[in-house]
Length: 134
Image (cartoon, rainbow, N blue to C red):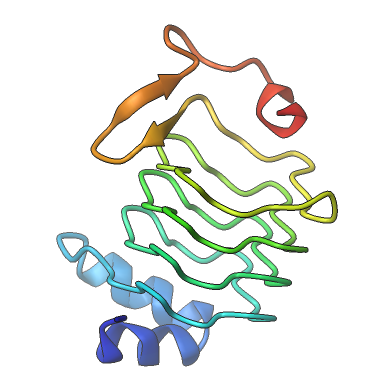
């Protein structure tokens, strides 16, 4: 279950959230199982957050930072992830569909399993556009 304080800060808006993240870089945001359907998270710093089993369906994640984020069983159906950053994220069992948009998304590598297991690509980094093509 999501940390109530973290979820409340996020619901106050991206500006408030990002200011809090800047002042508290040591905190790993706990947003597990949060229902963020249709939420505007454009530019949100969600790096290193725990979003396991969260619902981000139809959310706007334009230029959101999801690097090093745990996205295990997260719902991304019809989400707009345009220019979002996914480098180092765990994407195990996440749910996307053909309407999920990754135009311009940035991802040098990701993990298919938790705890940084099964890195893709195994060596080096994806070339621009390769992640979105997957």
